[in-house]
Image: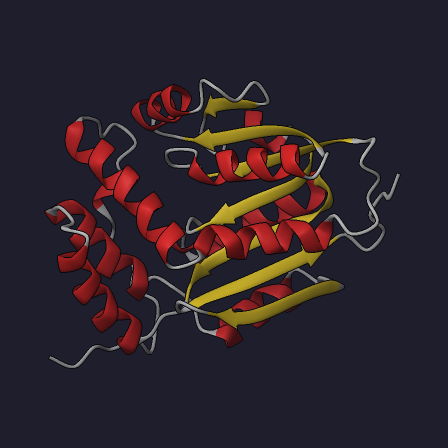
Length: 242
């Protein structure tokens, strides 16, 4: 069957249901984190953070928010990196699913500088939250174009240093490769179905460039990375360095 990747699909994912809970969801969250690590996804986001931190004083406490944080795997990786490199990180994970947040909290008990909030990023409470850096790993594709533009305006306004986006390249090759990974990692039905839909909800580079132009961004880079990801790093025009 030929895979049509010309336009982003609007087909929903099972995990878009914020009331979802149970062992199937827990297994899906942990498998997604495992695959992300295996394919270098965490490293891709970390590289973006490192780029934004260039010239920022290590004496400053840096607040980093991860939206759509899943089981908190990225935040734990950041906490380990910060400790190893003498950064003072205040790490906040945000997810709209209470079960997901509870699972992330359980896995992060050993990390004193990680906290979690259960809230919808389109609600007023999130829109008033300040931070230095905000991360969006495999989350942006869940939204429609108009929602992406609305969200990005909030992220850009509230971040003092910048934004790191790590999301999927919409590609027929990526779709076929993920089908193979489903067997390797023994993904459950929900993870398999959502993963394939996620790829079809992913992006082409020209779409990310178009968002950047509509948002009138001044300093940003968009790079293709393995495995079929786009790394979109946005720096505030005048980031605080001390």
